[in-house]
Length: 176
Image 1 (cartoon, helix red, strand yellow):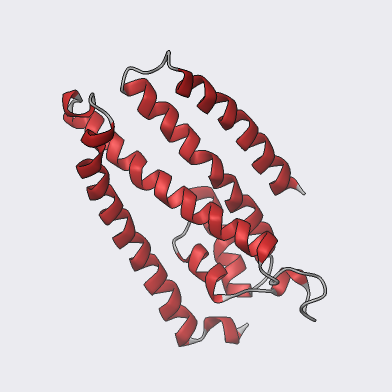
Image 2 (image 1 turned 135 degrees about the vertical axis):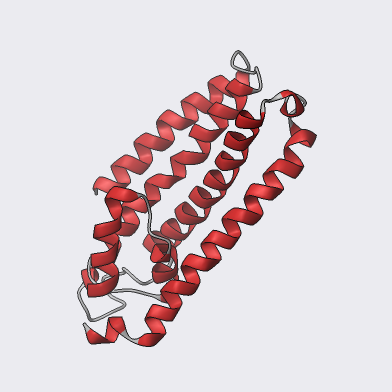
């Protein structure tokens, strides 16, 4: 366990957290800049709605990064492949998995992520749960379309269907 609490790992976690904060700020600002080009209704929003809009911009970006990294770690990398490592699956970790977990993810999951990082165990299960973040962009797009007055559009209906199936697939995958 002392190996996981080494100064190098603590620095890595701290830098991951700061990088996550910086990326959120950058994406927040970029969302405000590019939104008027894609949604003609954006300039008409109240300041509170624009704030929520930009919050959902970095929420969507964060969800995509976490979902893609989780998908990669679970299905494409050999990190959790039975035949590629000698140690138990629950004690496997990588720099990417530590980076993804570096920004503690929502209040109730903080403790489980902390235990996983400190003990170096159970990372595969935490990453499976993080994969459910893949539905967040659909939730945010639903809000965007609603606030932009496009609740009756085909895109809104298609997004709702994609949200349902995305949630179903992510939830089933996380429970496997």
